[in-house]
Length: 134
Length: 134
Image (cartoon, rainbow over all chains, first blue to last red):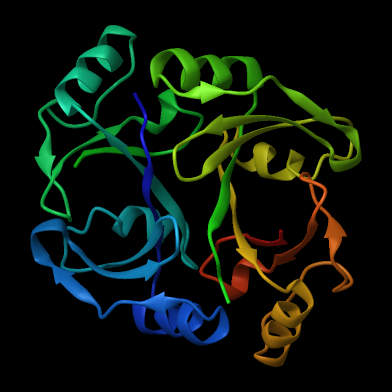
């Protein structure tokens, strides 16, 4: 069921500083920042040969990463996103096995314009998992 | 400088349960567990098309992930490993930029038998970064 790792998301308190760190110190290719008000984040992509890192900074008052950064002020790894072929089939298999899908169970449109679901971190060793149908 | 994401490591309190979760619930291909006493972990690889996830369970009294699990009893994302072509050149570039390399600055032999270094998470937005020379 799990396909490629689409991205690993890292929440950061200062996107400009984090971008400089990945670009200048770690020597990676980084995108321009993109504000996604409907997702409550500004994002920079770190492009790597086999996947990407998403640096996420809160945007607006109701950012979904605000609580994480309040708990982890320096930032940290926030979630990992796996690609799936069929997100509804994946959801049904997961819920049948007892895993909890966050929200109302219906896929939302993610930051890449594709349907996504998030799984409860308590069901997966403290790791927030995003599934994305490409 | 940064190459492929070699793996994302997830520390887990119960490797057997975590393996079953990735294999049965998430439908991924998982390896047999490997005990690495010299690294203080038992590891299972979750093989994905473009990279792998390493599930790590503490092994022995001085496991390097024991403190992390004491703080995060359910487990969680522990580090991300990037491949580099030349680990000594990478180290020199990093230390010249002011980033802190953990330990004495000399590469150690990692879990895959290759030279590795770890970078201080406080210098990289709360993310523990491993560099591995393939």
